[in-house]
Length: 59
Figure 1 (tube, rainbow, N blue to C red):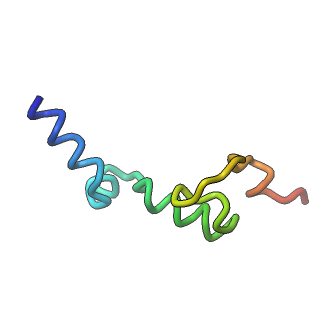
Figure 2 (cartoon, helix red, strand yellow; figure 1 turned 180 degrees about the vertical axis):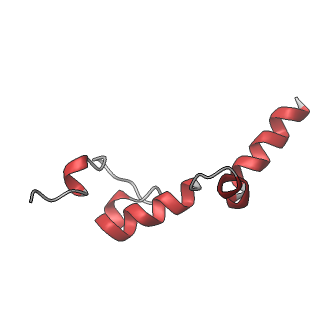
């Protein structure tokens, strides 16, 4: 049980994500919000998920 509690604490710490070469969920949320706007953030109620088309433009 103690290990589970410790793991949950580590997941909340952005430094632990970065230490392992990954982006923290809050960092990813900021990137999506900057690119797509407020309607796709985890802070608001939304009905649609972002798709690949939201990020890529046909050349």
